[in-house]
Image 1 (spheres, helix red, strand yellow):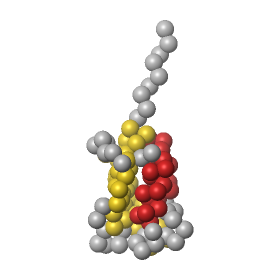
Image 2 (cartoon, helix red, strand yellow):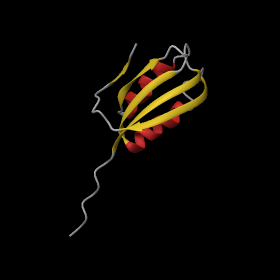
Image 3 (tube, helix red, strand yellow):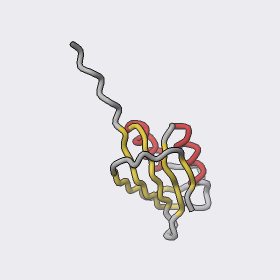
Image 4 (spheres, helix red, strand yellow):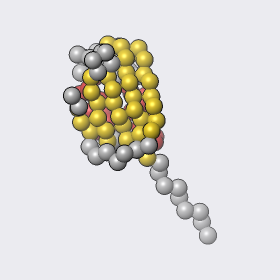
Length: 98
């Protein structure tokens, strides 16, 4: 009898990105990239000039998105990315929050 294949792990990453990340298309590039990867979640600007995002999906894909956050779109200058892993909430779709 074969061992069943393990279920793919769904994770949630709560990410804070600092640097020149507002006014450079970071949120919209995040939406495009996350949507292309099939992730759920949201992204928004914070009053302290950081960008905050949540990504939910398969672990490998979420980790790929977190790596993308370290560079972002071409006009961004990312200085710091802080990631907190939490239990997924079952989000659907990806959006810009205000």
